[in-house]
Structures are given as C-alpha cells and as structure tokens.
Length: 165
Ligand code: RP5
Image (tube, rainbow, N blue to C red; front, side, top):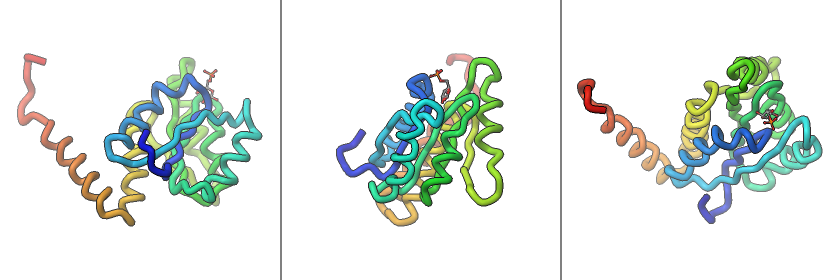
C-alpha cells in the first residue's frame, strides 16, 4: 500500500475474502494507485457499512471495489449509500462456487448500479484494472502506466505453445 492519500477503497465482507481481494490490491499496487483495504460486513457490521459508505466520497475515495460471498449484499448496499462508482467482486463460495455471490451482486434493480466482475481472482484483478481506467481519465501518468501494464501483458504471451512449462 502506498503512502499517498488512498483513492480506491477495497472493502470485503470477511477476512476470508482477503486471499481473493488481495489480487485487486496487488494490481493497484503494480499500477501505483493508492488504496485502502478494509473489512466491512453488510451482515455482521452494518454500522461500519453505513459509516464507511456515507463518508467514502468526503474521505477522498473515487472508486469502491467491494468483494463479498454468499448472500453478497455488501456491494449493493454500499452503492445505495454513496454516489461513487462501485465495482462488485463475487467471492467463490464453498457451497455454490460463487454463483450465489455472482447473482446476488449482479442482479441489482434499476436505479442503483454495481459494476459486477467475474467470480474470484479474475474479477478482483479486473475490478482493479477498471478502477485504474476510470482514474486514468483524469490522470495522464496513470494512463501511461496502465498502457505499459497492458503492453507487458501482451509481451508476455508466447507466439506458440510449449511443452516445457
Ligand atoms: C460474506 O460471507 C463474506 O463476504 C464471505 O465471503 C462470506 C463468508 O464469510 P466467513 O463466514 O468466511 O467470515 O459476508
């Protein structure tokens, strides 16, 4: 985590979500985007959820990434209480493999949007990349870093498959 004022809030419903949400944190770190990660449970710490969501914009955050699993109310409840863009990451649950998380995050009624990503690691990484893309609209240096990140990714793809890996 960088020492600059965090502009992305990564919130998650439980400590058990961190191995997934850490991929979002690592991606933001690689792009030089200051962030803060917090555990905020819609079910177990509702007062913390209200406090965080209602103060997020004034605290200087520009984007919220919210990861939750099972009956995953966190992203939608957060989005209902902040005007900031909220990206939801469905955590892969043990019983239903994250389909429960996905459906409960993606099926928001019209009026309160949550930008919903894929289940698990891919969703966490892509939520961070989307957050960076939004911030890069007003940050030319970050736009350059994002371009470089994508170029490195392209450069890392071999032309042909190998038996040696
Ligand atoms: C949700 O319940 C969390 O987001 C987590 O994915 C799920 C299970 O939480 P734990 O029982 O592991 O704390 O609120």
